[in-house]
View 1 (cartoon, rainbow, N blue to C red):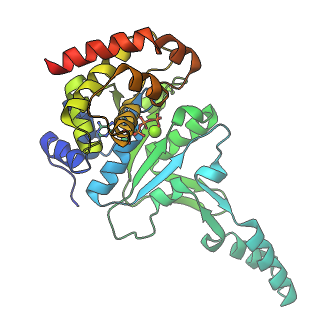
View 2: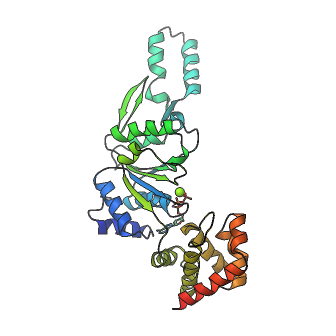
View 3: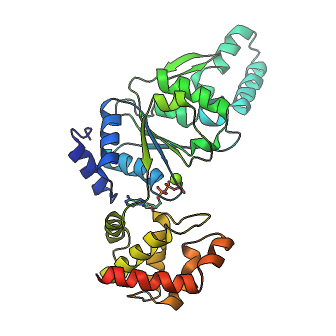
Length: 303
Ligand SMILES: Nc1ncnc2c1ncn2[C@@H]1O[C@H](COP(=O)(O)OP(=O)(O)OP(=O)(O)O)[C@@H](O)[C@H]1O
Ligand SMILES: [Mg+2]
């Protein structure tokens, strides 16, 4: 599939994947694709960062290669490592066959045959080199340690991985790269500078309703309106962790499963755990506050 040629086309690409994007996101994505630069997405949990990469891959008909970051992620897990056990077997077999040339053996066991390709290397050298380059999702980069970021910087600027025993492996064509961060810490400026940056915010009421139409289509329109009005109000309260879009979708589907076509204070109270995942937040909202917000949301949705 060719890359979108305009911001409108980019917005359509996202819409075919049931992703409701604001214009500014479509613009950042369009530019990132056109200029072959990574797209850096930051935002709170559950606002649809990871989903963007999935939708791009699906919409462009490209393979999605995902690198999930975590504390202690290293090059062996992210880029490549040598398959030690297969190398050992090869050495044993060479011994058994009476191979004498150490030089030749070393060359043999450090060849691509014994290389284990991890996501970064797979993204640079895809299994079907003739096809379009894959989409590389580097998810939750803020969880990885800073040395890994430095390594990544090298990969993203030169589109290559250097393996001491083997040489430098360079991408024929750079992959489409999407990096996400939940901002548990700041990502280094040097990484950000190479990317197009977009802050993924909570959607406004209109966009959130549109998301529900696509992601919770079985919900009655009136119910979806009330849900959106409720969640939008909840996000204005002082909470430890605000509900994301993921929670709005979950909650709506739960209400549908309970055969609800409208909100009522009792149901809201009983299902609040779908929206709020911290005890302090639940204590704060359950009861009077939930009843008040429900009333407000119903009035707003009816207007
Ligand atoms: N704009 C949107 N249009 C359609 N669906 C959306 C949108 N935003 C979020 N969603 C849905 O919300 C859910 C959560 O999205 P996603 O997992 O991408 O969030 P995230 O930002 O990566 O969260 P986390 O930081 O927790 O990983 C998904 O099911 C996704 O389909
Ligand atoms: Mg995510």
